[in-house]
Image (tube, rainbow, N blue to C red; front, side):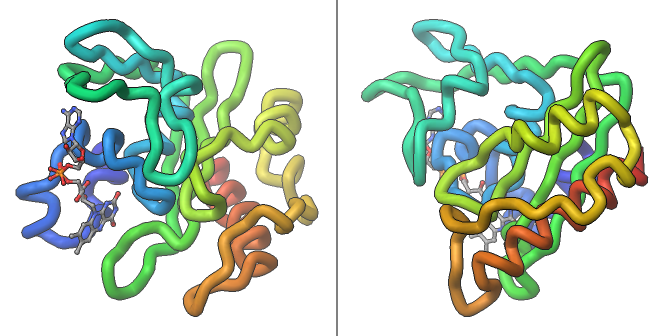
Length: 173
Ligand SMILES: Cc1cc2nc3c(=O)[nH]c(=O)nc-3n(C[C@H](O)[C@H](O)[C@H](O)COP(=O)(O)OP(=O)(O)OC[C@H]3O[C@@H](n4cnc5c(N)ncnc54)[C@H](O)[C@@H]3O)c2cc1C
């Protein structure tokens, strides 16, 4: 989490931006949402508790209701974890970022930057839950049909970056 935080924007952005603002905004390339998904976070608001898996609804869209305020975010401590991103060289937002967390029993692979909203890549999570080694996802051919495509990276390049960053994250664990 601390190395993820260290890679956000620049000192000015890090000094002013908040984790609550980041997840409430739910930018498709933001870093913190991937930590919430990978670390099975619970978002505490002034009204209720929301599981991260039900919090991020779509591009810039969350489960928050009008006037609902995030007060705290609780993370499950994993056995091992690592976040690796390919940053946009100007803003440092993730062109693709992958947060791999190995919990007792299963592995979560949370991906940001690749689609319209952060998501748990079930295919890679399943493969790594069976064998926590980067070789188990090596060469995985992910479906790029719903991936973002822009001047920075095509959908196919993003699909390949997801696998590369996931492998880096596993190796860094
Ligand atoms: C130049 C630049 C580079 C950046 N680079 C990155 C990057 O590399 N990675 C990255 O992840 N992000 C990046 N960001 C985003 C930045 O880190 C902040 O997360 C983002 O701007 C939100 O900031 P904030 O906390 O000030 O929230 P605000 O901008 O104040 O709020 C965002 C939205 O969330 C709502 N909100 C704020 N707090 C809460 C709360 N507690 N409960 C409910 N709703 C709330 C606000 O009403 C608003 O709708 C970058 C931003 C800039 C300007």
